[in-house]
Image (cartoon, rainbow, N blue to C red; front, side, top):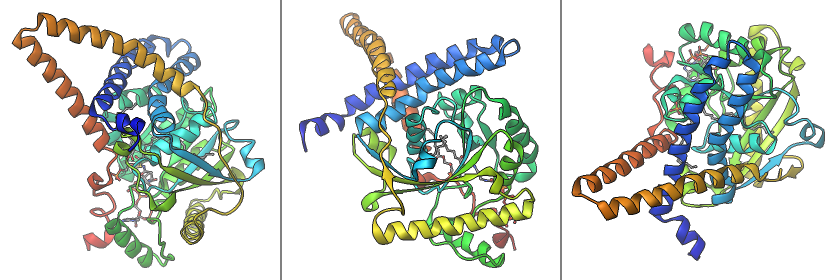
Length: 377
Ligand SMILES: CC/C=C\C/C=C\C/C=C\C/C=C\C/C=C\C/C=C/CCC(=O)SCCNC(=O)CCNC(=O)[C@H](O)C(C)(C)COP(=O)(O)OP(=O)(O)OC[C@H]1O[C@@H](n2cnc3c(N)ncnc32)[C@H](O)[C@@H]1OP(=O)(O)O
Ligand SMILES: CCCCCCCC/C=C\CCCCCCCC(=O)OC[C@@H](O)COP(=O)(O)O
């Protein structure tokens, strides 16, 4: 192990990174709160400000992936589509197999300049993740309970709200609705069979309602669907803890740009269209496993310096007072103050560890296992 790798794997480095993320995140959250009075008077300005504030949080995680772990992100796509990325609103349909697929998604957003404004149809539980959940509230992220009876109205309303968003955005949909596990796959394929649909090898059966309602409500505001398929080279199974430890991964993303006009308007045709899309995605994954690459030309969109600059800004701003405070505590240090400091550090570490745990597949929800109609019979 080289010296740099050794440094990156040290707990003290992780502690500092997490401290900077938490404290800067909370500061940004407070500033976001101060934008509240602006919303009724100049909503578009409030949104633009929040895009920048949100960027200041999410780009730290991107910097961790791009600059700390040095993970390579390769894009497989055609030249004409490449020229349009970041210059239009789009719905992104992405497979959901990896613990850091959200982070790779963010990284591509960053490289095409839409990180601050990126959106997602996210499960409601994520709204309660400290820092991120609060940030998302101000970025008008669309949350769902994954219960269609409850979601139909709220999701439609939230989608209508973002139609006039002042910055180009990508709206991410993991149509499978949950992360891939063997058990969920097995159950999902029983559902596919019962519906007379072809079996998928690498994906869960997509849930079509969210996709339909998104297309229906964003038609006219969004110009394309980006059918995106992510995989990692050499059977890597990336984790956020691995990234924090400075481990380098190799992400490959295959993107096809599909004009929105070619997505059917009728609900059942739209659902059939999505099922067909996932059958094609399955073939792309098969191709990847056979050949080690996706079809077509590949390109590596360059890293931009902004995520690193933002990160270094927060690190320099927040570590000096921390060091000074620790020195003062040690000098004056009563047992009580030292114990209190230790307790605050432990509480911080535990909460960040809890946040990281939200990304871990072995703690994945039981969605797709419990609620299947086959299990209810
Ligand atoms: C150039 C670069 C391009 C791209 C770059 C890539 C990405 C960057 C883009 C943006 C980045 C932005 C943000 C990223 C940051 C963070 C991301 C964080 C992640 C959050 C992700 C999540 O939280 S995923 C979970 C939440 N989201 C979803 O669930 C979306 C998908 N779900 C739906 O759409 C659902 O329809 C729903 C949620 C709207 C409603 O849920 P419900 O369960 O009620 O669904 P349905 O009514 O649809 O389900 C019933 C139907 O499903 C059938 N069924 C039952 N059991 C199963 C089963 N086990 N498997 C499959 N199907 C099942 C059932 O039979 C019903 O069928 P019907 O025919 O009757 O519909
Ligand atoms: C600068 C570095 C800071 C290091 C500290 C990192 C702290 C972690 C911060 C944020 C992590 C939370 C981001 C949440 C995004 C997780 C998205 C996700 O993958 O959700 C899963 C959901 O789709 C499906 O859930 P289930 O499979 O049904 O269960």
